[in-house]
Length: 193
Image 1 (cartoon, one colour):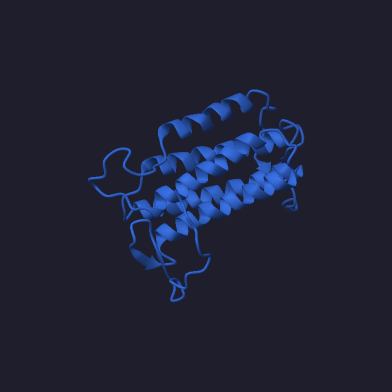
Image 2 (cartoon, rainbow, N blue to C red):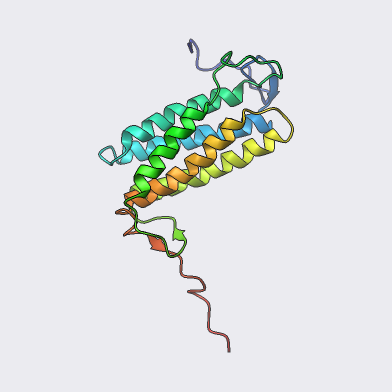
């Protein structure tokens, strides 16, 4: 259970912060950078939900926001080599499977793609595209962290699948893809002389 009695502690005033195991690291440590991007992603999803409360799939997005706190908790607590399964909150395969089921369910009704999509269209779709790019950045940052420290591999899988789901949701919010704005390669180039 999380208990916050004070909002400011002054413990990070010199540019360091505490991880879940009590270790102090600089605020620009790859682990902190990664879960900071996950937090940013969660905030953007909150903007999507508050801007479009009547949109479809809001409950799915809220469940993802909850999962993203699980991702942050997983990243905040370094994983030891001898950690016993279930000893700490970690992202699990069934959370990824839930995303995959949502992707499969939503993708069935989408117009087939003939080009890449420009981020935008309807407002809710634009928020999904922004969230997708933040999710991809968070995924890259977790991969960078995994080069030097142990990371639960399910975190990377979850973020990878979530970015796919956010792409699909963007298409859903663009009238099931009918209002997608397609990339037109070379559209603004002058013809060759």
